[in-house]
Image 1 (tube, helix red, strand yellow):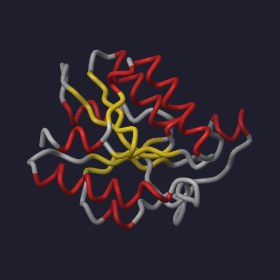
Image 2 (spheres, rainbow, N blue to C red):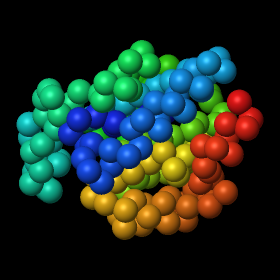
Image 3 (cartoon, rainbow, N blue to C red):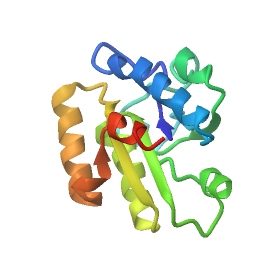
Length: 168
């Protein structure tokens, strides 16, 4: 699962993961596995607007997936919350599901973290590809996101893409 690698979240602090995610996802697809990408949209009147006073990522171009990710032709799930475990994703995966999900994207401290925790809580086995995640708020926040994610889902669930490639 590629979380929110879209124009509104890619900046000088997060752009370094985009090409890496693309390369990894191509290998993932070549091994016969499915790639799912999420696209966040912040609708007017959202909790983000009401409580955080954040009104960005409402429409194109901010909601557009980065071209490298869009070119993969992934299944794209639109969401309006931190989590990627939307009803649409759960329908796609099928219930009951007790398998593994591999998560990368932006932002480690927000949507990636929340998706991993929610997957854990519904009985899935989340793996966060730590080197394929970033925070648009910078490296310190990315590292804080990884620290918290490891505490929530177990540090063994934080893996590097190179370690996973060996199993593809």
